[in-house]
Image (cartoon, rainbow over all chains, first blue to last red; front, side, top):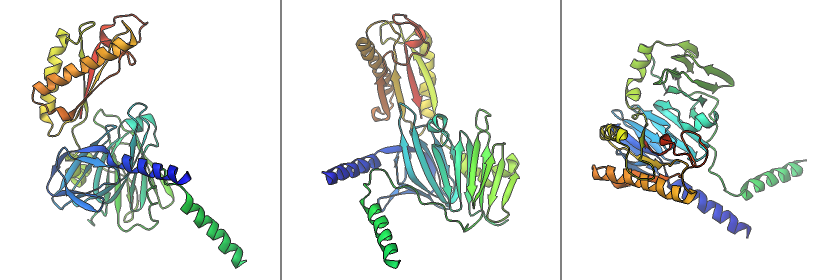
Length: 145
Length: 210
């Protein structure tokens, strides 16, 4: 019985991974999405899912709008993992965790942050950013001047 | 002593393995050592409001809440104030790629019907113009009613209004699969009224264009 419950929970988790949490709205240059070990060419209108990794080439950039109206964009030579995304469109409760591995990221926070200030976190290799209803940019491995 | 520790370690490990996988795994904690320099900058938002970013790094916590306040991590570590120009030259490409802001449109209706009120016809045109500016729009259409009539009738009427807007968008060449229509009946009045009041501002369809 217990195993049935665990299996059902695992199946539910898998199902929730499968749905789109955002959509690519604009891009230029080389951009791809790593999903389930596959490398998919990105295009405007393509869905973004939890656990996706967005990667831009040296000439690439991409903009994504999420279900709660959070907006993210990546500049050239950037890698961003969507670690976790959950949003309830009725209550506006949710959780958004993303990790910038390299490159540049711009963030415009959305409805879930208005509802609960701790809902969104952005990680870099050496920091964690909590977002309180704002717009900000992050750069990892800033080149020496 | 060693045996006791081994048993405790075994119990801890076994406990971890038996935990059911009910929620997605938490992201790994950030490593303590920075592999390179990082920079975080708070921007004024499109409406001029400045929010707050709290940066936690190597055991310190920094609050950034002024326009273009910045924190460097790693090389030249510390908090600093950048100019708008410095931010634009360092982040030009990424700032230029932020998607178009979601836009909200409100259309009003003739009482008891799915006929668009005369004053809302211009707004419908403005929405179509906005839609055509976006390369890959997705559109959320939510119908509402005033508080005249039964809940069941209003649920039906609110959905009819949303579907009517949806079909006029499809007739204008917007792909049907990009539009989600739903009805909320009289549950979310824009103007709070007593039951039975035919408040025109509540007979509406909200359209969220992203």
